Length: 115
Image (cartoon, rainbow, N blue to C red; front, side, top):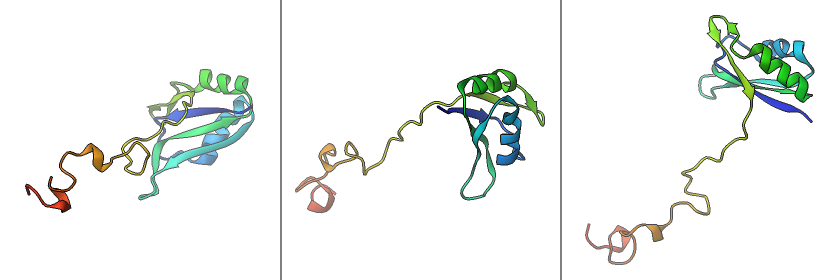
């Protein structure tokens, strides 16, 4: 089973290839991805590395966490599961008219009323 590692506070010059090669010294790397801003194409300063073994992942975390890379102390730890984003009006528990007192016939909105 592979282990996913979060790598933060990366210099913007780090690429997928350099990230993979730095972690390869500690075990087999399945994938390495630096997260990029979709509008500008620049690095967001963090990424994820997936290693084949938990032992290799722990060795990389122990060795690389806090290491200085181009003057920046990088953060290396186990990745947490992605959390659901809130606030979407399209979710089942999202924003409905029944939660608004000003919507409906005679209460404002398109039904007329106090506006």
